[in-house]
Length: 189
Image (cartoon, rainbow, N blue to C red; front, top):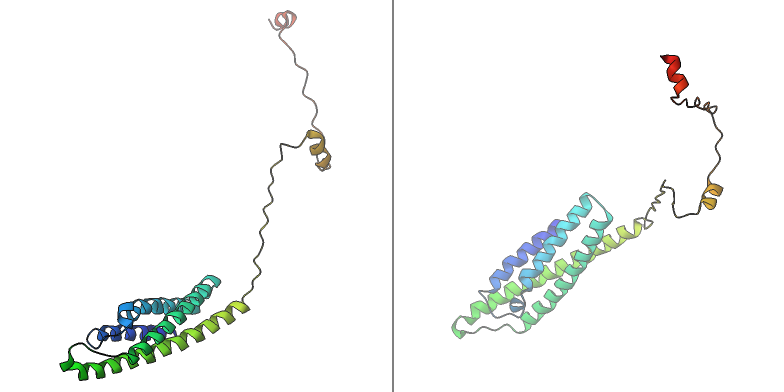
């Protein structure tokens, strides 16, 4: 379905170029045969990427671009229907062939826009269904710091510090300090 969306967009650009050489149309000055297919191609490519490697972000992006595709194809349908109602050409001597060509090209645009509308609608429905099946629960992450809070008063800190049993006996105190006195110097000399 996505490849059909891309190919229909390319066909619509080609038919838009053909509009230059036929009768006056309301869709040509609006530019919808040219900037509309850009969104159709992007929507089709993003839908292909979402199908290949599904993720929430790709599915949401594909859904939003498919909704834009629905809007643009609906605008294209309206403008093509207006074109079919007001086909006329300026030089009267070549009008018959230009009017026939205008009806032909506008009918192709009408069918293409209708196809794009239906494809984008079905892809949007599939996107909504896949998003409803996705888990909306975001895992929570808790960060526990091992730092000591310095701003607590010592009485609170010592009350909350757990008392762990000592596994080793306490170390013996160091020997007393012997200073260099005159008697010690005489004994060593």
